Amino acid sequence: MSRQRRLGQRGEEYAAQWLNARGWTILDRNWRGLAGELDVVALDGEVLVGVEVKLRRSEELGAAEEAVTPAKAVRLLQTIAEYLAHHPEHSERLWRVDLVAITLDARGGVQRVSHVENAVVAE
Image 1 (cartoon, helix red, strand yellow):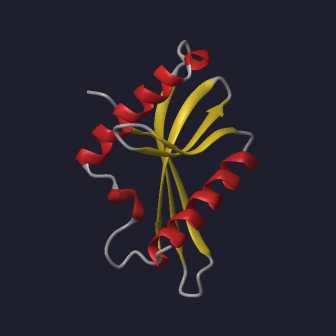
Image 2: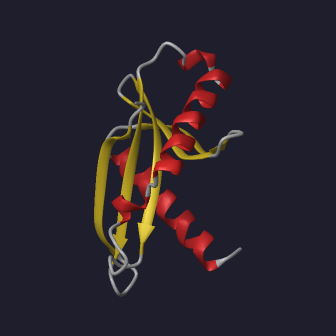
């Protein structure tokens, strides 16, 4: 496994624990559909949330929040639609796509966590 993939998994694990500590129910991790992957799928109360996790070792090249491109946003919306199609028990729920952005400090510790609700919206 590449160093970048291990770092990504670390970010996804941290984000899932961070959301769980805030009362969210984690339903799935790394759910794959034809359009792409949802890093975390969770319930925030009664709302189904697909969560994209971005982790950066520094903000030299920009903040993690800036890492969701328009093409990635389209794939995330397609993937949450696929998730709902594969999980009819959630088909009547309100849903959204959020971003959890994590920045590490020079020693590898978590320096900053940012949660952006409705980070990706359908136009």
